[in-house]
Image (cartoon, rainbow, N blue to C red; front, side, top):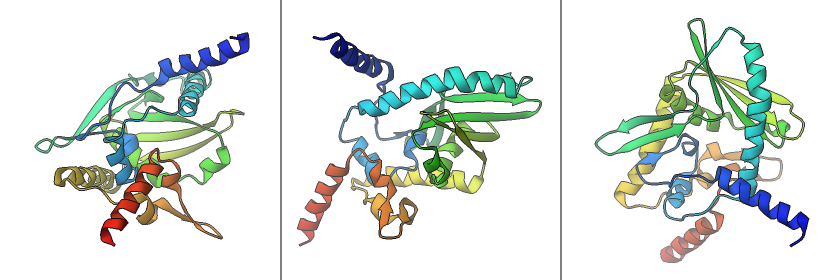
Amino acid sequence: MSLAQRIDDGLDDWVRKQKERKYVSKWGTYYPSEVPYCYRQIYFARHFSKPPELSMLQRQVVGDILHEHYVEPAIKEIFPNAKRLNSERDFTLTLDWKRKIFIRGRADHYIHLREDDRTFMVEVKSVANLFASKHANLWAYEMQVMPCMVGLQTEEWCLLFMSRSVGSHRTYDFELDEDKLNEAIQRIVDVHGYHERGEIPPPEGLINPVFQKTLKTRTKFWRCEYCSFPQECAALERALKTEED
């Protein structure tokens, strides 16, 4: 094996060891990042075990570096009198104890601060294209942020997009909104209901307008572009159509 090949393979193995998820998706326990997922995507995640793609793990490693060596020191200078709270911790929201429905998350790329009587969170997300973040679907982030704000007991939330290539940035503010929180909770309760009834959820990514973006020549189904199960979903749709015929 050449030196270059040894380093290439070694780096890939190291990334996998560092960032592979240690948990398994299961019914009853849902993660904040899943709240804006297509219902069927959540279903497939609990029926088909797929390891995360290497490219995604590599992006997470770069995000770790940006967080630790860029954002953390900068935030300390921006808020010199703020007290740093324990950010790296797990939280659980009980949505329905009898039905065993929970949202569980872990704060890792978050900076939790208290300044006077104000508590707030800065969440760092590394992106390849900062321009794309300008047109990000903020609804999807609201659905993730609202449960986290309750679980981590914070009043304000700043989402900080950082460019992985040049270090430029863009920020968005969120405040706790009861209607949006209830919407996020209802989405998880609804998708759990499909499991309880033994039903396969519909391909929400193709039929819910919130997952559609109208372009000049076509309609873009943006959630489907980020789904890990496009082949499984298409095969299921063909099978269901055959049954109908």
